[in-house]
Image 1 (cartoon, rainbow, N blue to C red):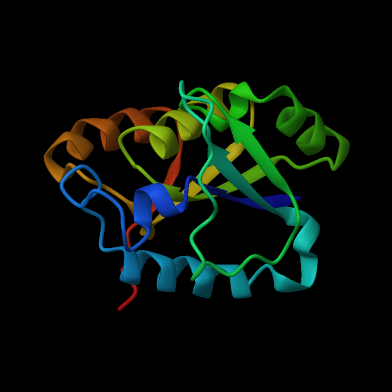
Image 2: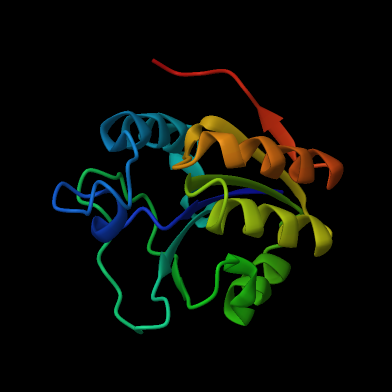
Length: 160
């Protein structure tokens, strides 16, 4: 069974009032692409999981308002990898989910690290670049190679 995990699509990182220098994502395009991806999962909302980063400050900003929320499955994390949350791992195991599709930010940090950890945990991991925010494209060249070596399926088609 396959689940979609949407990582860190919070006001602080992709909202209108974010620090654009620190979080330079094309938020409008990214949110639109993720929302289009969510349509594929609407009929099985128990397979859509949202991850919120609470970081070291333990302060959690809300999911960005423009993001379609099709399930009430929201897990928080304080480390880069969403798989650092034991409750998430238990949910995936209980639902017999063996395949994970990732979306969100950032391809070099939380999404990338989650993809690598997911592969280490035995999940088949995929991501579509049109649904991943990447702040540093040059750095992602190296990250992409690491992901490919870990057998993460990277789909390169781009949505408009």
